[in-house]
Length: 455
Image: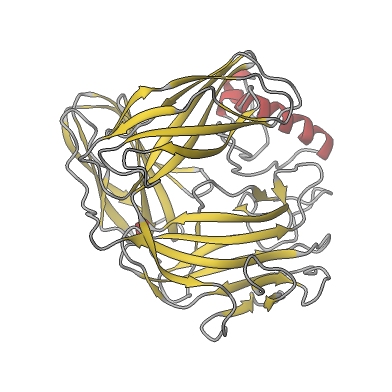
C-alpha cells in the first residue's frame, strides 16, 4: 500500500490505485496518470516498498529429523532460502533474520549472512536456518515465515509459508482423457477460446488451452471460463496444477496486464464465482486504463490480481482449507482486451491432495499466554457473522476486513482492549459475495482468518 507516501508528501492525495504491497505482491495498477509520469512513479513506489531489491525466490528443505523430507511436529528442521536481486544494482552487506508468528516454532539458528548480489543474481545464505517444530503442533498446516532483510541499500520484509505434514492425492486430471465432465463457455457478448490442445502440454501430450486451435493467437474480446466437475473437498485440501502463459501485459507498467487469467471457486454449482489466491500470489494485475487513458477493454475489474505475461511451465498451489467438506466447482477464467493478443494459457496435471486418514487434524488449544485463534461463525455467512478473539494481556487491538485485492473494506475494532474474550458482529450487508480476510493485529502479532460471504 502507499499510505506512507501520502504522509510524507503532505497535503492532498496521489491519484493512484494500489500496485504492490511492502512484500512485493502485486495488488493493482495506476489510475489517472500519463504513461510517462506513471512509469516514473511506479519506479519510485517499487523502491519505497523494497529498497533492497531483494525478493524471496525459493526455499528447500535441507534436513528434517526422520529424513523423509516432510516437516512434521516434533522435528528439527533445516531450511535453505534463495533470494533474488530484481534490481539493476549490486547489493552488499546482506544479513537475513527468519521469524514466525506461529507459537509452534522455536529457532536455534535464525540469522544468516548472505554473499553480495550482482544485478539479477539469485543467492542462497551461508548456512541453513534451523528451527524446532513443537510436538503439539497441528499435523497439517502452513507455517508462516517472515524474512527480515538488512543490506547496504536499506531494509525489507518478505514472507513465505512452509507446508507441514503429508498430503496424498485423492483426485487428479492429466487432461488426456475424455472431457465430458468439464465445460467451457463465454460470458454473454464475449468469445470462448478454451479447448483441449496438443499444441503444448506438461505431460504427456494434451492440456487445456485458452487460445487458438492452432499456432495462432487467442484473439481479442475474449472472456470465458473452463469449469470443472463438482468436487467434494476433503479436509485441508490443496489444489496444485501446472500451467504456462503467454498473454499481453503493459509495456509501460510491466506488472500490469491487459490479458490474463484467474482461478475461481463456486459453492452454488457455478451460479456465482469467487477468486482464489495462490499461496505465492498472482504475478500481475489487470489494468484499469488503456494506454490512451480510456477504460481498458477487457472484462475484468481494474486491479484484479491475475496470471499474465510470458512464463514457462510452473506449478501453482492453492490452499482450500477454508472449504473443508464442501462440494465445489473450480474454474479457470481467461480474458483479453481488444488488441495485442498472444498465444494464451495452458493448464495441465491438476491434483487435489489432503492429509492421510491417520493424520490428526484437530488444532490444539492455544498455549498459555498466546493469542487465541481468531474465530468467526457461521462461516460461510450471509449477511452477518459473529467474530471472536481472546487476549492474554490488555493492549491495542485492530481488527479489520480486507478483500482479495488487499483493500480494507471494514474496521471492526481499533483501540485498547482488556484481557479475555471479545465478540463482535461482522455485517456484510453492503459487501459483494466472495472471500474476505479478517486480520487481527495486537502487540503479540497478527492472526488472519478467511471468511466467505454467500449471496
